[in-house]
Length: 221
Image (spheres, one colour):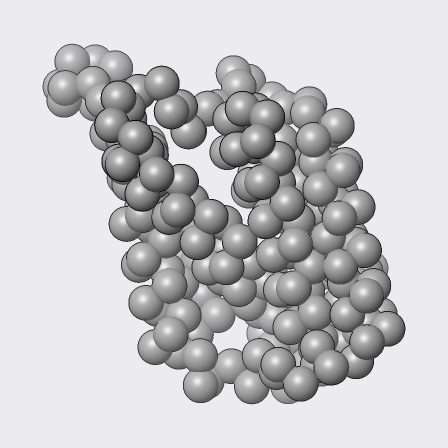
């Protein structure tokens, strides 16, 4: 529950959003192009609340890991590298999904609030939520269902390949997502630290957010 529930809540609310879009497509529900933007704060807050509730039950969340300067510098470097790859590996399957469109809002205050929540979610909540699920739970669960007895960062080819691909499939930019999954997995094997993976993931998402806002490349959000 501590490692799965925050992720499950976040994904379930995406499902609600997609279902509402399906109903709108067939005229059952009124269309609302801004729905993905409006629901994002709800998703972020729900996952964040679950993370706060369960944080004490995740001993792998160790801030002291970040005091290891070589590992921390490596994590920052990996995070920046994933960002560069992300904005260049833009191949995706199907129609391009655009979930953030500032043109839908005339109120600068409302837009500012939504951008703030987007940064809070993408640079803080999502990295913790996803790293706990993918690197702490899923990688270890693929090795042994009694995953808590599997050391963090234990390598196996099957778990490495499956987790990297599944992480990519979670994202619209599938190729970039798989590469990111590989990078974060390799970082975990090197540092044996979920906290370092969270830092690296947060760096990627923070810099991506700054890039999106400063360049107007909203398609990456």
